[in-house]
Length: 263
Image 1 (cartoon, rainbow, N blue to C red):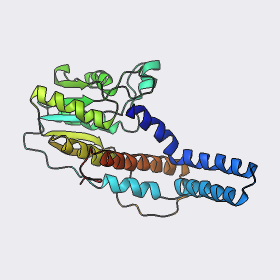
Image 2 (image 1 turned 180 degrees about the vertical axis):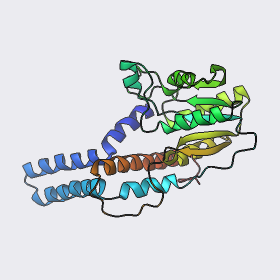
Image 3 (image 1 turned 90 degrees about the vertical axis):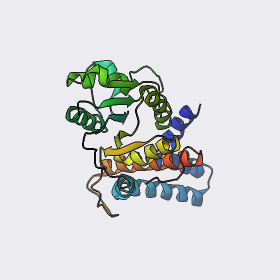
Image 4 (image 1 turned 90 degrees about the horizontal axis):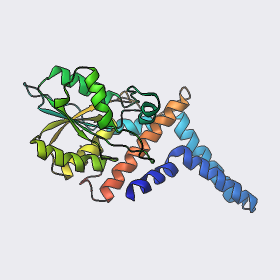
């Protein structure tokens, strides 16, 4: 139930949805004659849209997360194992068209592939099931076999965790598989902005993992400013940042991580 509740909550809580709901409320308030309150909600909607579309606020919020963890030095012999969290494949497109299609988080699997080619003894655990409402699509763990196989990675090196739909489930299910295969101290590959939440969950679960962030969305040196050049990109960055910050807060309040912002 909490999985679906979180999905519906996020549909309503993202910035453009909030701006839309504020306009709807303003229309209702105008209809009943509450003009001052109507103006307040119209200003609220305009403010949300302005910050989301025409400032670098989202970039700065996302950058704060991306800067929490850097890549550690690898052991001389290379990593023994790699954990990559799902969220990188276009499941609906693959289901309809076939093949393997990466989305914006595809760097997670590109970097993992590079590591597997560089360290042929390393194994990889892919954690990610079908996170859609319908539950009709192959998750990242299932699709990864075709992706890695196309580049000559032996199926014997691949461990698939196909049931998880959230980061919390990623970690819970991964813990059992790591113990079953006698693996620990693996590299943890996920998007840089997602790394704090992932590390916090791994630590709470008592699992040792070496952060290996990828899929950076910011330069690392951005500052808060007006930006009228790329409203759609600004909106996407703001939405991603707010979603991740909400996820961090929710997991901390639920006792799933020990600190609000792991470092």
